[in-house]
Length: 497
Image (cartoon, rainbow, N blue to C red; front, side):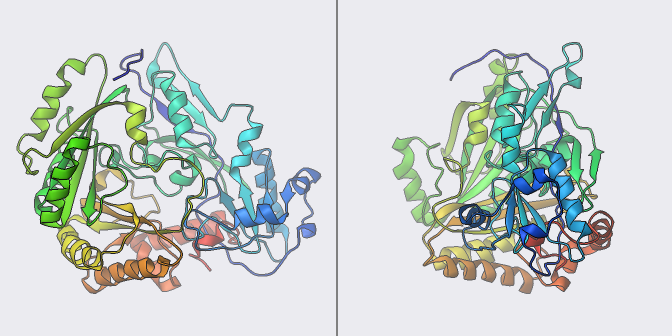
């Protein structure tokens, strides 16, 4: 594997100096033409109403919901966004506003029907290449941090940090999502069990509220330095062994400094997922034979970071950590890869919107009920229906202690809970069938009393939203009323409609 020079034992405090629209919601009322805004000439000049721009703003990653706005703001500064919100508040009937970054939502959550969409990516062209700025304190590396615009994508943050031998801690599986987009939704991945979601590792946020006021909030976190990754995949035919091994491995966090740094899992059901290049070509027939024998295989993906000082002992550390795990004998695969290559390994190649619609479902499952998901969902719904699609099914655990209860995201009450994601790229002809499958999964969970919480949930009724947030609802509602009293922002969520 390739090597590059780094400074050892340096950490990065990630300061996200970003402008994001709060993850709150608004009531859509009446139609306002662009001329109704008594805004500055600068804002008026940057409101775009041509059909091509409006059509793009009415499309997201799911390619299934289309809500056309009145206009798109292409801001040249955060001041314009703040002023736009203030102008909307001044109207007798405020107009709704939604932020759009990489449009990676799948249910129209970044859209504003008959409102205004703010194209956050447009800010990048006016920062003069300063969208990601690394500040490194040579005397005290712990004071190093990155100043990042919310419109930036995580891959650019990674590349900029690595030039200084630094890295953020927690990641999502797709580094082409925007910083602001993942932070308003927590941001989860294989490192979440150890370091918490991405938002828990942010030093400071600059947020524009529904009143157009810039608010700064902070919670200090630190991170580590890595340059290489020992990556493993272990194959399981027994789900109980798979889940128990995962929970054992994440339990080592805090008790063992040499524990794995990333723990993630996915399933092989009927057909392979679209990330199989990890496995050696000569072993594919053997893996296919095992899959044919058991119908479902459970793949445990593990990663151990290392640098120059730990390179000599990495193999011994990994062997010690996997000793006693109950994977299928001889089905263990290892690779040494660059740190940045590992972080990019789980995402689909390329950026931008996909060619076909996406049928996605993300749920948090209490650890005590994950076996019910295996029997009722993986075996009796997904496997039996045998629908053909490109995509992946994830299933891996996280520790509740790494999540701040003040976050609005709803999670199960148990100490260990799983993220189960059914992420499929389908065709317009099969979209309805796959969406029906997702509804069957939700109905099974409801009828079985599993107590799941949806991550990035679809629009619900008002009563369902109250149930979804549970004990957090009143605080969430109070925060909305305080910072966005006219309910202008993020109408696509539909929480307060």
